[in-house]
Length: 368
Image (tube, rainbow, N blue to C red; front, side, top):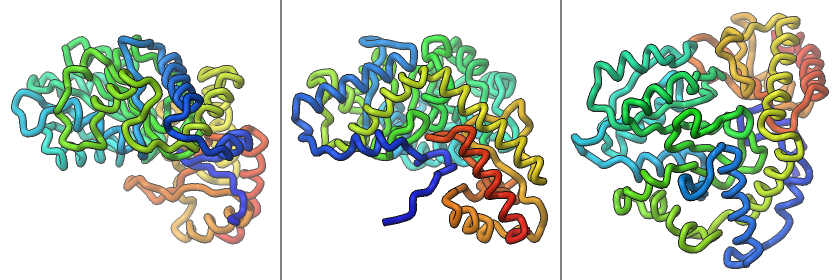
């Protein structure tokens, strides 16, 4: 058995013992108890998003978060059509991934590329839209974990939607950990994953979908398994029933994780905990001589990028020294500077951050 580690990553992340224990049951996908659990999850997700049926549907989809993003693009956008154009606002690897998906799917798209250490802003988006009146759909990342930057969707999406454009948000690393109200923000499609801020385990993605739009998309998907319309209709016509074999153990873990989110005080309280974790981490790291890549004003509470302290810094030795102390962090992903990343979500609170900082201090002589 591998050693137990505290995962300081943007997901998978450390989960509670009770979430792990929830998976120790084998259920049939046709079992009435399992169907009821699936429907409870779908209802609770809509509540967290500030919406309700029948206007919105929480569509669960087997696979990682990227499967959910690709299912949305493949289902709601025509292929090789001059009548539809996707705008991708990108300031990191996951925005770039959306553009790559659009290329693979032969979807007409235009891309607003913003430096990875700068946020996508409403001014940039509206100026770009003024130059591209052909845009019919708009997609962006909320928390871009390339750097940990938080893009201000609350100032961007309402303006985009007011132009009659369909809005798509990849909230993979933020939903459940940062308050998001789909109606207030005028979001048509929001995608996230079971193993992020709701603190479940990997196995499925979910899409909060505007039913009035989704139900016009029958037959548009070029993929059978990634057809979001068909998946939605399966849940609509046969409550709780996935089209193909569902990740039953992951579903049970997620159901428990949702209960624990509610018990914690909901998304607002979890957001406060994550924010306190991140502030404690940055203050402690600065005291040890590490500097955050991003300014506080654009930093998310999800994951923080730190610059390497000197040219001789050996990340692999640093990583292994922390892993030997049961802490797992992330390598850097940004091209702006040599760096590494530390997440502050999951079953992590201030005592764990204090223990991490003590472990980092004890590794200084090994890695500098």
